Picture 1 (cartoon, one colour):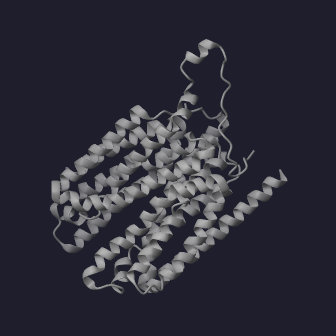
Picture 2 (cartoon, one colour):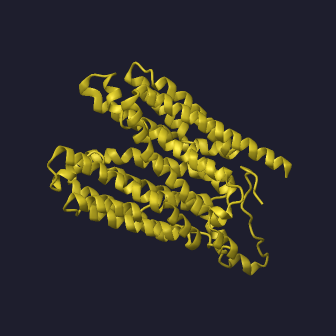
Picture 3 (cartoon, helix red, strand yellow):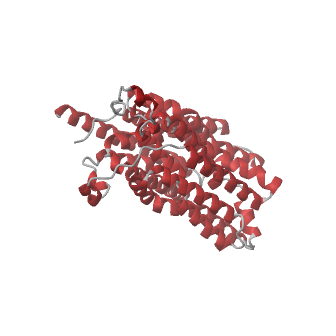
Length: 431
């Protein structure tokens, strides 16, 4: 039987014995994990931040590293750089559902330990690459072994009291977006100080610290074995009402499309607004504006969602984003675009924590990790589809059409989520 959406109920607490000796006994594992959910959250934020920084810090110097590895032709440098950067996200998208399923079966903490140790090794090996194909292969390996941020989403979503899940996931989303913001900045000033290879080794060392914190500080409720029929059915078959989960997969895809659709055109678009010598600097501010807005707003919108309902915040965020995309197509100064991207980032910041919360409230606990894994894959798909769509539309129709087309997609997303929410409300009344 489906549970009602967004009803903030606390996790059931088993009755405690009243005998004096029981007070001195070690608490059950469930109680211990519940008591340490805030510490778990802190470790997950730190680990997600360091791994995302490691995945993105190579953006400013990737072409230089490819050239150091023996590639001299300009076109080949661009192609190898694109392949190396996209390889991690491609392989991560493929294995995210698998890691989510294994987390349901064997524990979320175990998956975080696997991910952090694997990423620490992979990042250190990237600093030892001797050819471009080795760099691409190791970036693929980093994606296959990684997934710390998505694993943290699963652990925080399932181990945090439901009444606080929106706020906790918002804090975690802030850490993830901060990693996306800080990574390229560190990649800009570390290589001149310590060298490119040492930059990778330093990031590997930071992730290894996250591995130690994960292994020794995180406490997790023991994984309950699925019923035989549920394990045979599979994750999707175990979800009676698939509407909310499918809506959240589509919403995650839209979120990343909205964030990434302007990536291929932003430098050319900014060039129409500023002097040539300022193009790259202003483009950097525009790209980081949305990430900064999400860092600021994620935890606040998550807390708001805990009070007013996660689906209400999702609909509102999508609608506001759709409205903010329209004036971006008609800006006449660079500061206007920076402000609008910042405001849009603040609106989009509420989506990631609310997506995870809605999934948690509407799927069985035994398959939450697997469905969240599919959600992560849909977001990676958006990271790939967004730049492809933006580049195609910008090149064949015009750059303004990128903003207006994305606005229409976001408005449709808000409408679909609103209708699914109403349908869920009517079904709840009939029961």
